[in-house]
Image (tube, rainbow, N blue to C red):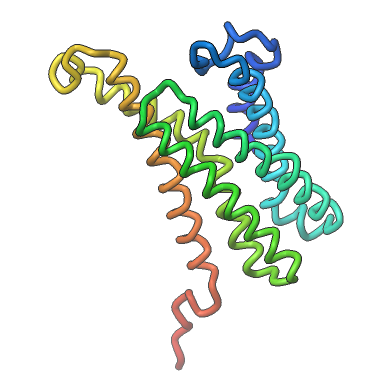
Amino acid sequence: MLVAAAFLAFSVPPYLTFDPAASRLEPPPGNDFYYPLLVAHVLFGTVAMVTACFQIWPAFRARYRRGHRITGRIYVFAGALPAGLLGLYIGWHTTAGPSVRVANLVGSTLWITVTLVGLRMARRRRFGDHRKWMSRSFALSMSIVLSRVINVVATIVLTPQVNTTFGGSEELMRYSALSIGVWLSPLLLLLLTDWLLDRRKPGARRPAAVR
């Protein structure tokens, strides 16, 4: 919750001005739809990140079951799904190059897919499977936070190679660092999520020694 709050406090305010000049992403030239849809994507994504924190909070789930269901519906229908669908448009029209474009399209598609599967499992009352798929959805909703951290690290590592690997192009170096972040962050978080889920399976722990 603290990490999500810090990220949102830093990332969201520029978009609340509704001023394209304050956007952290460069809009494509001549595309008048990009910035309004980007703002909508940011706002729906904010809803997703906030409600997702309540969804994985064990004490909240155990004590407020009705609240868990309500925040779950908000997460799906006013957060993850609209943010993911808008992410497809934003990702397709990115100016950061083809690698970032494909990464954004894959990430948005995965986010929509695992969220719908998690919703379907809940409606079928298969709550064990529901928890697994929504845990993956939560991981993807938070991947943007990790991608920003990886982007900074990748930029620091790649900057000395501007005049060699990137032929003097700082723009190419920045796009490469951004590409590393958007590809690596969802992969790492999904691997971590499934590792944690496997650890919690019945029988996953070593059985106690028998006298």
